[in-house]
Image (cartoon, rainbow, N blue to C red):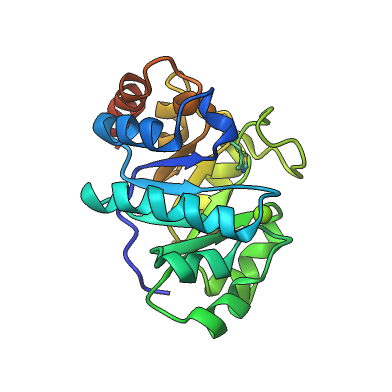
Length: 211
Ligand code: TZP
Ligand code: MG
């Protein structure tokens, strides 16, 4: 809906994904390596804990001028003053979020079916998640493994910024961008890396090469 989406490397993070380290530590290293937007994606924790975690993370991100997106919890997003929210196909629909929160917040929406592209939900979104490009152990309740062909198909059908997610790593980052992704989103490739800064830098280099 008109908000700029200039981001290229998107870290999706939860406490659980950080291999025993803190979210803050992983996020700061990832930013040093080239991550330029961060999503906090926590499942099955009380809202107060989610808010607390999001506030701590936002303090750090603010220092680096990196925006925070909250996964599927409007209350948390509003309370912490996040840049935006990301929702899936089975979450609160983007039109409902717009009605409550309004512009100019950033609204991301995961595409699991091609039919979603023709809907008001897509129209109401600022970027689309191509979810998943490749199947992943990090999220197993997925519908369509788009592959590079599916990503290219979506690219041909919409002008919205496309964020590719699902088993993206330094070995496939180049071809995923070439297939049409504007931005790459990762969990494990950074959160599970021994050196998150180096991992982010490697991904960022591949993205820049492919653009
Ligand atoms: N949505 C689609 S795939 C996925 C999410 C949150 C997880 C991606 O994790 P990884 O470890 O980068 O494959
Ligand atoms: Mg969801």
